Length: 347
Image 1 (spheres, one colour):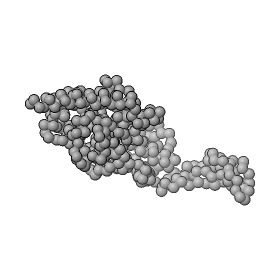
Image 2 (image 1 turned 60 degrees about the horizontal axis):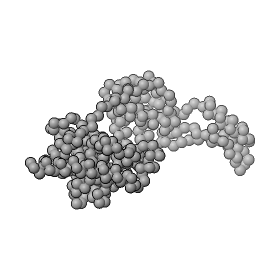
Image 3 (image 1 turned 60 degrees about the vertical axis):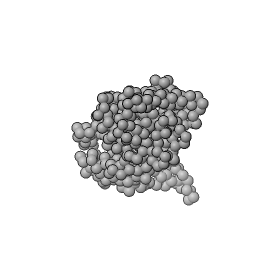
Image 4 (image 1 turned 180 degrees about the horizontal axis):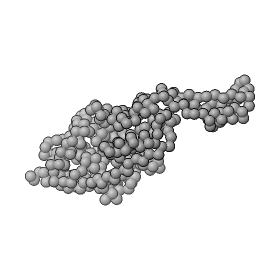
């Protein structure tokens, strides 16, 4: 409870939160009394006995207003994803008013979503609703059970499989995809980070990863900051990777979706286990583990977020100790690439 403050008149006043209106504006209620104790008593009594001023709007209006309010602070992709979620996943409860929301209605909504969507997508819709209710101070304890998260068994490709994919794109003359696979497998870059790179980000054998090109549901693309602050990083690459870059402009000229589509097509045609482009990051991690690279270096190179202390360590400039491991990583990739080049030259 807020404490009373003495006014110039000599009276005491307490201001407490009352409600948030449909425009997102907070309202407060004031209690003034001759003494500090009396003012605080009146405020406490009101807080304990008042009924919540529930906005007289539907769930659809509530969530839509929440998205509008947050649109300036959230990334364009997040906002677009929220709007898509509201449009496609809230049909069963969109016309329910907030003061009529019950656990039973929410459970029916969740069960309906679970029949056609993945547990992760259902959890995302639930999270959006809870965030909107919480913003308007309407969040309550609902007895709702979400579907159990799936434990996905993802495959990590081998050296041989990665080289087969690279060979496939080299033989097709698809330079964009050769570079994309290089950066995914040997630099631990995400698709969006690869598509955001330009030659201005190349400094010697290093690249500066500080932006990402992402695609919105409507097919348009937007250049934004990296996924997390930990994702902004400088990575030293093997020389053959940097030598494959164009002299000017974007490092690759295709979108993240095109990278995925071409990669999936290649994997289907080749005699390899099924894996996604994103699994190249797992491949890179597996190599670093095999070479006994410390986790701090691994996380810095891959741009993964971690606990605060670890972030403080790997955000520093790479030390001489870390440089030794960076040289080991790049040296390994240089060796296997030389084997590939030798093989292609003899064909």
